[in-house]
Image 1 (cartoon, rainbow over the protein chains, first blue to last red):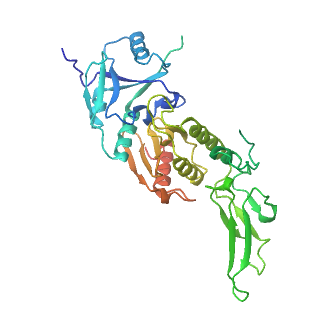
Image 2: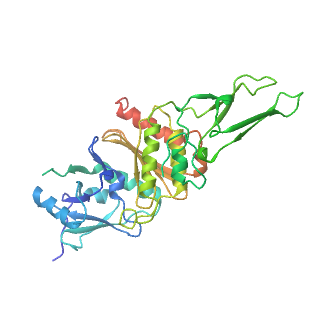
Length: 127
Length: 226
């Protein structure tokens, strides 16, 4: 059965690079929402309904070779407000692809700035 | 091999070696020509015509100074102006520039080859480095220091997160052009700016759009226009 993402659901972008966020300001940077050079989509995860430990467990499992440092949480309707679409493809489980990026560089940067602005930064608790 | 600032790099020194070898004089300091040493610009002067008030100035930049913005100031015009000429290394006061410059060098070292992050990201080009360096130098010293990062397409990313609601990001791309986007203001008066800056617009003076964006961010962050 296809995954359903509601407007108010939480989507998480997992951050493995400390340059993706500002600890003093407590915000994700636009870089956190930049796609890989040759990809059309941005990877996020539908974390609605998961408790905090499981949100982190899911994130850590996505990149076993790197240390998860933080995450940027958005509501699904923040993504839509930025003019993007969500493809809940569940591959891997709970994965969603963010599609519909503008073709011009300045518009794309503006979208990333808006996503970073709307996102809530959550630092990974230290063990 | 690394070199201390101010030392002349050997022949064949790398791009980074030459950058590190740049003289470490404080920014904004006025340097009398007669005090310049061999590693610094060689300035020659002459008069085009003895009966004319005009004169010419030739500045020969050593490699280590390439990319630096220089201004030549005539303190007072006289027939012999050699002793009156001063080199003024831009208007920016000593501030965060040295720290930002070091971060920019680190970023270049990190991302100087493709796939520098094992995720297929593109390398940062020298051209992007040079434009970013010029941009940092040109920005008003009273502006906050930007955070410097590397994008996945090898672009230099300058982030001003002045507060949680007032942000400006400038990306300097591999071919030298820049794009920027800003958000500012509170919930009642949210504003935004975005645009493209051509490489040629990045001179000794910061592009007007960036100055305007930074001014708006500062104004809103200070709470004077919420």
